[in-house]
Image 1: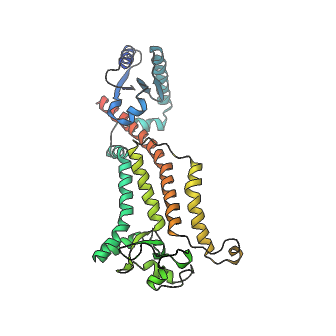
Image 2: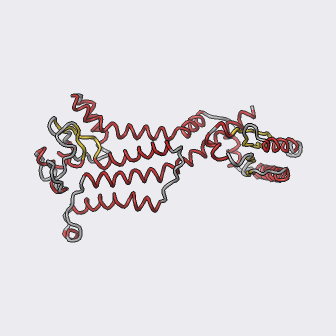
Image 3: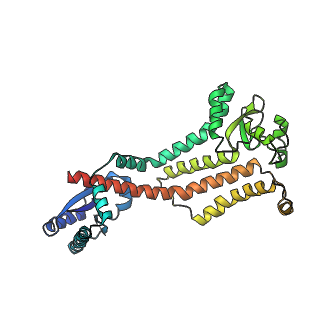
Length: 336
């Protein structure tokens, strides 16, 4: 038997007319009518609010205005398609039929996640960028064991160089290398006594990575300056996206490349390659050490634009998932 899904709402005269026409066509085209109230889900209300009644039969969709003739033609096409697929014994069709007959725990979990994905992403980002700030706070309080556990947890995810990280509870927030050319601040070499850090091959860079701070210098945040900016910017966009009712459209990929990827790539790779001391490159790209300002700005641009590009696309996918499961749950309930 065909499943006919009717997206409707209360006090919808046009919907009642479609239901009456479907009832008259019941003898000619036996079907099970499944009604879905679009006001039960904001996703459905946003999609069908100005289009109801909407009828779905297999792969076919009818939108208002819907005449009896259109219904008859669509039901006939759906019956012919169903009979043809059953005659051919199409395995994909059979698998879809079996899958649609029961609601699994996986279906319920997927539906729950699809409705709350943004909250989950924002909470993950809050925890992910929050724990690195908890590490220096714990160090300050004397709780070294959990603090060092956080540093170790993030060590595979970030270089954690002290001269490219924020510090809390000390004389300064940052301690750059002398090569960064930042006046008015004590350099990392001066604050810690660790030298030869301008050489990327120097073993003392491992010391700069392991250095977590002290009472005078302060204690190091477990993520570097650029990473902190990236993930805070992603969190910021996630919050703004939620406050907007998830109506912000996706950033064009060309703008993401231009505004998000190009600045961070230029700043990061120019710094990286300039420090290898390759003679053939030094005349074109002299040695440079980026500043905290450039790292934060480029990181924030990358994080914000990446989320701007990705989140609306994720939203679209999740909305389709919600609609799919609402329809599946309604069909299963109607068939019981």
